[in-house]
Length: 257
Image (cartoon, rainbow, N blue to C red; front, side, top):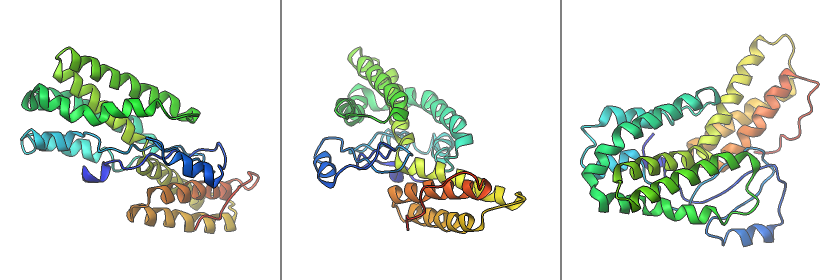
């Protein structure tokens, strides 16, 4: 995965809070961080600025070749996004940021570090404008707030290395909440549910066929850069494939094409 593909464009939150009227959605889209509520229970968040990331800043500092193995590890940690590897992948990213941020900050200098973090710190103000943040996003967003505040304070105190480390960790936490990461997580979970049907003594054939179709559609949507559609399809695929294994469990949807 390239660093470019990790960049954020628009804020969207998908959650089970329910449907909003079209007019309400249109009004929300004019906010600095537009919030769009859909029927999906998987919450995701993107920001409308180009977030700083380890690879781009290493390149800007002239350290890309020197730090290539560590940068590759950081990029590789985004690829799978499965639930059972999320903690490990986050630890990998934190280690790379902790190890590399001081060297990058020294190469960029105080002014370069401040400029690199400026878009991220603006997001701190915009995040506060989001009303009715989904409950499952609250702890993660609070952590982002804390890291951004650390970065801002460190900049004010002239501690560029600490500021860059905190800022890059905040950027990574935001990407971790993005639709692409959420879609990969759901696809991985749905794929495991599909594999589980192979050894199951009894399955619901209709749920299985519909779930597999939606899972394939989720992969296609992700490959085509349609992250939100991938989230929808993968979420419903997971429901259906789990329903195939548990025929007593009600399933609510299978309509996303």
